[in-house]
Length: 313
Image (tube, rainbow, N blue to C red; front, side, top):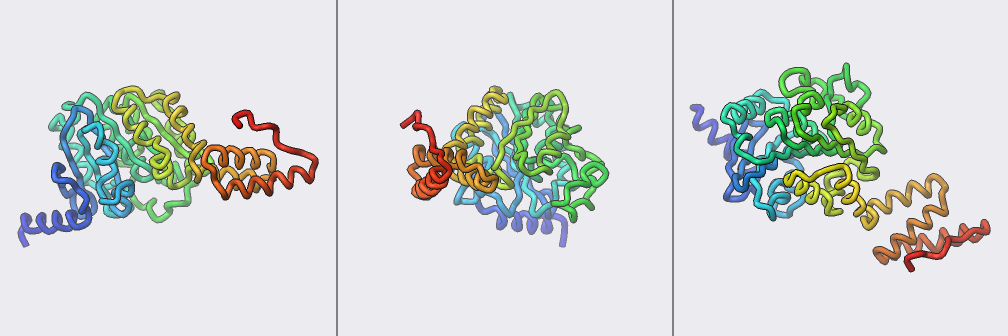
């Protein structure tokens, strides 16, 4: 089989794997384990990194998340896809970014935003060095899996065999060329907080998103926070204050409230748990929280306590 025929087979493989690519996007296989999807439009570029297994989780049609996040604004978008948990540690990916740099690709845009979560958040920070002055938004990113630096993280033991010491390797160092790096993490997982702490350069803003867990991307999408964050970054307006204002949406987000209630009950904080239930009933008319509130108020009454009047009633 000649090289051309082999490339066509690889391309067909990726097209089968990624059926949600729109007609305006160009698919470029980067070997068998990675692919790039590029759609040019407005002079703002969103670069996202995604896992093929969860690609398009925000859309029923399986389109890349970048298509969802840029749909209204009409931005250009570049999505790097990994077929499995590769951490994008692949010479073909390095060569692709080298080519983009040599061609001056990133210089064509007024603003460039790199985005990813977890493994893909690592990649967003690591490859942002190709576009100095970009903005990076990384959710629960890993800084590296090199055992000498992150040996305390036992979640990805089998992936430590990959080389994180060569090109595009140590994410915090690679991200130092960015204008802004926003590391948004759930501090209730110690490993997330420790990786976030490794991003310590002056251009880094570490923002806490407690109780969002491993599914932080899904949680922020459901709250309506993630699209607003991307928009703010593309407009050059993203700041810690903007994030914290947006993250107030958690006060109406039922998964967050359920997690908070469970923790308060586990800690025996009945009075605070009752306040959370009352808030959920007021905001969302939740029958589940109403029933729990009744039980908690009974427990409080048994100890001679009661909730204060609801100031928003």
